[in-house]
Image 1 (tube, one colour):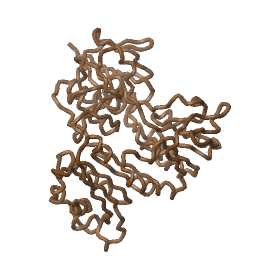
Image 2 (image 1 turned 90 degrees about the horizontal axis):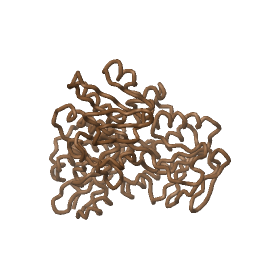
Image 3 (image 1 turned 120 degrees about the horizontal axis):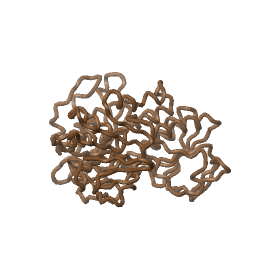
Image 4 (image 1 turned 135 degrees about the horizontal axis):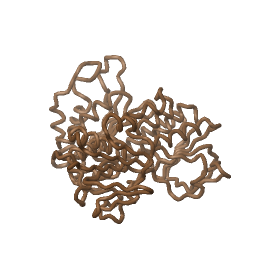
Length: 440
């Protein structure tokens, strides 16, 4: 008997799972239901398409189009199919004008940008950046006599969009209701990000909350709790919420933030129902509990694990440590593990090492300073987290530290690592080893 697999969602997690199923079961009947028109595209590349850095345009961000999944892999890949209900007793998913039965179901519906119910939020010129059509609209609007752009939110998307707008010659104001940009970094590290933004002409408004927008049919003015000012366009980038609203009555357990609760096998509490990606929880190896950090790396891994288990293999998702990296003008911002705030919330006794260290031998041309923060458990000296900001060499170090966190290494373990050295790349002691040696 042919096994009927249904996957809701056609991007990172969903199609990673689908490919594992068809590779392991040539006779599998796989149906994927995507509410939009695009499959398997690089969401993380969208801001760089706005900045003109993706030379082939938005089409270059599509890894595999829908026709490839149909003709090459035999997947019944459907577009414009939004699922509105899941009946876990009858094993049936449905939406407007369609219903599909399943033997095994994967929910990989991702997340959507949060847009509060602000006055005037439906005016033209107010955008989010999550999909290719979103980005097409931004690019078109950006060239429509648009000079001053307000970016609401200082996270990944907000920072990347601000940079790419500036590179396109736009005047940018960033509005953050908290005291800093990049809330995943500690305040002391975020100050370096603020300096970089201001150096490139970005106006920063902190501790300021948006109340609404004014304009006839198009946004002309943004109103906060402190002031109002003229704008030509607005980007809303204050975070995302899991796309799980259609599951409220089907018995699937949800996390308090709306993400689907899964175990290591990507199983939900309902037999034969799996979940993966930005709509699901991720186990955090340092916090030792489920978390919600929606990133493409996690979605691809979780989707692969879900597909393997659905196809009959037995694999577990090993968890995350909270690693991320991004470019912001001339700086690279990297972090992994816990921030100081997170460590304090978990009541972990924490010590900090702050250091400024050249990224390679100072006598070799081109040496740049790395600003490093390492956090460790006071009594055991187990590494808890790290943040690094600099112009060169951040990625190399943050990946070493992420690996150290995965294996729950101590600060002394860091010192003992056998890391690559040559003057163009490093010092005899790597900067993270030098920082570790400066602990009290």
